[in-house]
Image 1 (cartoon, rainbow, N blue to C red):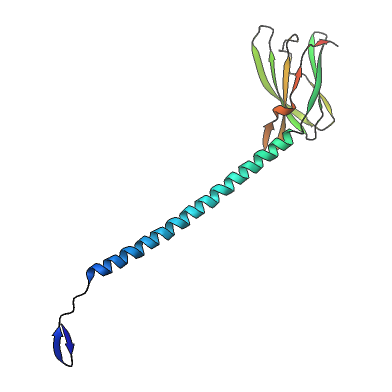
Image 2: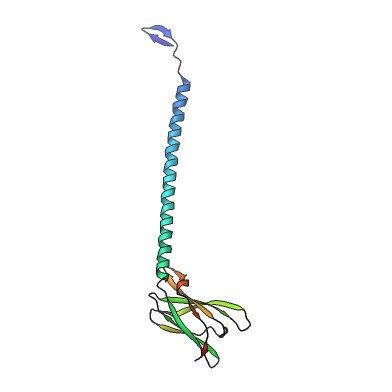
Length: 165
C-alpha cells in the first residue's frame, strides 16, 4: 500500500523480472572478466615456456655447431688404439661410440672422459677392444649445457680403414 497525505493511494508492485535481468547481466559481465583474466594468465605462462624452450634449443644448436671431434685409429700389438682430438670450442665430457664386433653385431656405449677433453687437447680411448678394426667406428661427442650432458651429432667423427700403427 502507498499512502500520500495520510490517504491510501494504491498498491506498489515491484517489477521482479527487471531485477533478475540486472542480476544476470552483472553475473555475465563478472564471468566474462574472470574468464579473460584466466585466459590472459595462461597465455602469458605458455608464451614464456615456449620462448624459454626455443632459446634453449637455439643455444644448444649454436654450441653443438662449434664442437668438432678429430681422431684416428690404429692397431698396436693386436689392440685397437683410438686417439681423439677436440678441434672445437667447448670441452667434451664424454663420447658415444657405435661399432661392429667381429661376430657382426653392432655395439654402442658411452665413455665418460676424465679429465674432460678441452679444446685442442688429445686423449686415448682404450675401451673399444670389442670393436672390429675392419669396420668403421662412429664417435659422437657430449658437451655440458647447464646441468645436462648434450650429445652433438654435428661434431661426430667416423674412423674407418684402421691400419697397423
